[in-house]
Length: 185
Image 1 (spheres, rainbow, N blue to C red):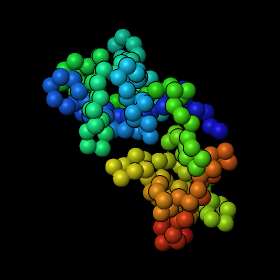
Image 2 (tube, rainbow, N blue to C red):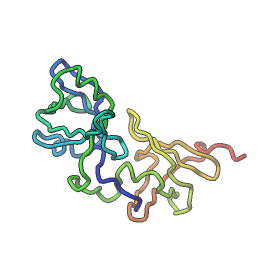
Image 3 (cartoon, helix red, strand yellow):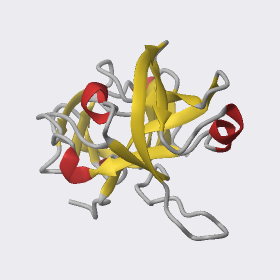
Image 4 (cartoon, one colour):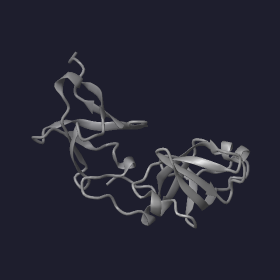
């Protein structure tokens, strides 16, 4: 396994909502009811699991969740440290983190997002195709950059292309159509 961060991303603050400090949170977890329950704590941070530090005081920010309700494809969340819209706007695009040991481990055939980079990509017969060189979260889901001998191919991480994930072996079995490969030089 690659080095694993102590904290993992579970949400992203997208914007302020209303005037009382609610924030719209994009979910990055399969367990939102457990993670974003009133009384739980989350940490401000970066997508790679690093805690955010105030540039002036160097203090880390912990948020205690005081309220939550469904909103579109995410949640509206209130926390103790954000009391109005102006403060909420300052947290736009910050990632929310929780300790790894407070999350359920991935099910068979699943990985944490931070584990995607570096996975060996193979075809259904087990022949090597390349490796995941980067990944991006888009509105429709994840997009993987797969570095192959013919160049880099961007492939959606979905059931159309991903056949199987073996977390222990660090392999991703994919069905990448030949027409997605760039021309061999």
